[in-house]
Image (spheres, helix red, strand yellow):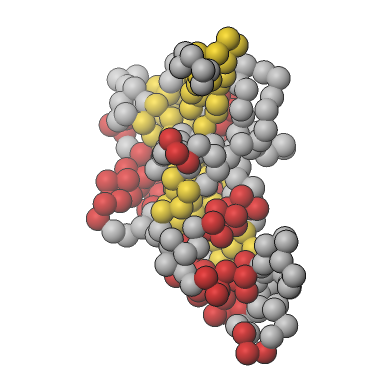
Length: 299
């Protein structure tokens, strides 16, 4: 039983490939997706594994790894860890815009799910319920609009409506999802002005088709040239994407009284370790993929 809850926002600063294995499709190496929404997701086991792998590099002590995250499967002293990461859900997705470079797009469904996770962790969330029809978009920044009051995203045109409620939501989301330091100032400001809300259906299209797809060529080590049939495509979540995951803590379960921590101390340790820190999730680490900034929000 987990006694303490929090949420962790994950802000992508590079393409992220949390792989779902191979597929018989145009994309050979797809990313993980939720079955019911089709939105990109990060498996909680992958997040926890990444934290464990970089525990000491983040400043943690080797002695704390097992009691917080559990021992390795080949250990002779098996016990459950005291920290659990849930699957990360999509909150906002960067989409190319005719004006402003790109926008942060979301939808009522994604916002409602993020609000639910924050509320379950005890965080104060005063987000108004937003409704938008297919073909329409809620905006804050009217400078993004064309002369006919429409917003152009990729090859699509949407009828825009201004929303004061969205402005309040965007300010709160920017404060919760991004670090307060100066180097993130541009992105916090852009999130407060350039957050838009599409319908669940329209957003679902971009969540499926607006990913970063990169071609790769397999090199023959003998000749140093491309192997026959060695072309393959890898899907990535684009940089500037925002995800959210539940973070839970219990008292340590080592069974050793002199090595015991209460749930509050466990959550404090893991928050200190990852809050506003750079993590590497998923594959292709040697090519700079998988870099995300974590932001922990407690109740």
